[in-house]
Image (cartoon, rainbow over all chains, first blue to last red; front, side, top):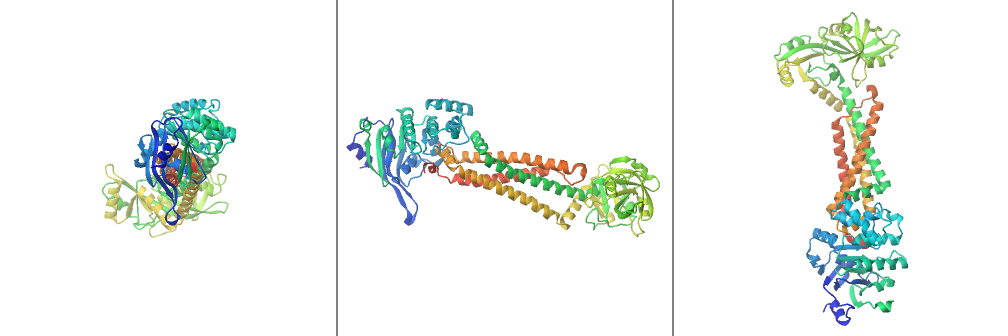
Length: 251
Length: 376
């Protein structure tokens, strides 16, 4: 029995799951070759549902980021199947996967990865520009998105003139500007202090979560666990448990 | 994404300026050295361009225009007898020493023109009348002769000097293109030139000719060669023959070629290295773009746009600087500097080559880049 199913059987989720947005089955990923081969993911099974915010937690080197990269379609896997938003990523050619990512996924990175010479609005507009939207229209939508994340008065600021928290807000706006169905976040609070980290997670929860979207967050920051719906714990390349998050207990 | 590419390029000012300086320097060096080289080549065949006639006939073994190999005086009539020749006139060309009244000696190139037609005379006269060359003992100097022989205070209209102990009187100053050897040119009539030089069995240097209308120069030169056994060249061919001789017999081609190659290599090295550094330092950003759906093709297009933008900017500035240098230093024809559209086109192609190669190094790096790098 797949571990994910096993986890579901033991611990029901807080809200009945709807359709699975992400289905991972028997995922294996190794790095290196010959005697130096390291298997980072060992037959992972996981479902992530629309409308939920799933936290991927676990010790460093446990495979969280590798799993996230595989789900996001930016890392080839060695074995298993990966169905994301109704499409099989494992069978998708690289170019189609790139287009698929751009159209249906949003990314939030630990180090923000904003382009330093672009203003906040221009950074937010990048996913739209990639898909050929006219600059004027893309910038207009970028500014609107910045208003939604509370940076309406910082649209023309360069990243170096924004605080870390503000930069991550810009990154959140960028991830959401093309209305993705899967939001992938890698340690979004790691480069921020406690209060700013909380604010970013609030933003991801409030602005990012939607009934037709699922959010996967890799984190080791226990202070933000309260923002998730479920938590999948990885240790040594295996999911050792998937738990619903008891909000009351956290509070 | 062109907008993003350009903002990335201009945003990193230090690297942009370094790239721009490298490419500007490379363009300026190549254009400047190329123009000086071509200017020298034009000087080397200026005897042909200054005389400005369609056909040159002389000894078939001649290497270049200044290497005179005298031919028999009968050659003029033999050339005139070839069908398709409209006219043919003699030309004397030889080196003599002029002795000024102050006792100074100067080496000069004596050019003797056909007195009845004055064919081969310079197109522009700066002072006096060229036709006065028909007066007794009259000679016409070019402006370089005035400069080399002491300047306008020493040489002016009416100045008298000696050529081989015979009197020569300046009646006009003509404008000509400077010669590679920078030996002053003194024009006189053919018959008088023969009187100035020591007696030789053969005195005719060249026969200048023109083909009749409707007969091509190439056809007439072929006929002259076949019927007279002389070497016959169109002015263009003779000019190229001279340039070719200079290239083969002096190290000038290798010297300038090395400098131009260095300009290319320096530009290539600076542009390639800076571009690569630019890419490596922005690897995470490029990875993020890839993760967000930018294809390798899109990123390659961005890199090429950046490379060509900075390249064409450097091209414009480099050409501007080189042209400015040429304008200031070669003003009045004192220095050889001939900037041709062909040279600019070649430099443009070379520059686009530099930019493409520089960009390709970065594109290869980006093509191999796993977007997963953004999560590390």
